[in-house]
Image (tube, rainbow, N blue to C red):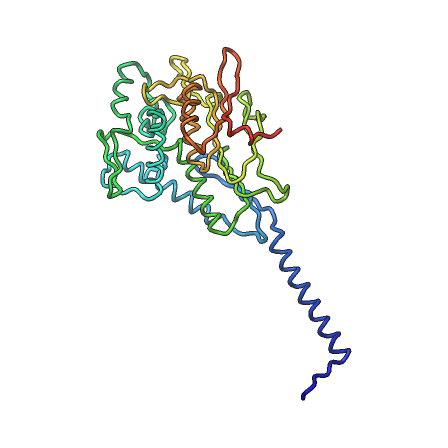
Length: 348
């Protein structure tokens, strides 16, 4: 029988090598389980963005994020002269839409139906006429002019065909997906970041946000804020703080976004009523919406602004996965309504 004889020195060497191996494993484990906070900032969709993310290495996201932004702009930016939506707006019936534009079209169609027509991306001619689009506003908008413009408004006057083209009842119909495109762009950035293996991050673009996972530094959900309606551009106060985890939040408001006609002195707000063509405010002064995707939150925020308080509350009672925090006018004062599902998200 063969015997293996272990000396004291052999045991010491074995023990030492085991300790070294264990320390190496612990070092690798600590490196993997202690991600650091990184920040990426830039410009997109006519505004700025800030992305905070946790990762053990400084993962370079700039090229990927820029690629996503360019793809969304190429698909649906009315400010890009060679974008797909610009060609469609100019009457090109052969332009084939990509998957992104089809996603946005179908979501807009669903919310259009849910809202009884108050959300409608065919209001482009109205937005341009009132001075909120990418074309020079009309010098005067009277009842006859408005009736003429309304000929080219209505989601029932367009159709997304099976081959990816879009048919329009009138060549002058002008799509404006700006009330949903920015939110959709955030969703695409989120999808890209998740494809890179990131789980804990916050994407903020023009005041709209998507919060994924948690804020690891604070061991808590991400905290963001609702801007007070009496804020000014220099000092922006918060009306409320909101806790978000794997949720999107977008806001719309009339308290700052308006245009004063230099001739008549009339104030036009940026929320339009697609059913009447009116550019006058409802009793809702701001709408902050939480949803699973930023495209939905973006679109519903615009919808609630047009609907007014009573119809917004009725719509909220019929749909799921959407919560809202609405400020509304009561005489010369402002009051707040929030849906039951929004209350658990509020923080002191």
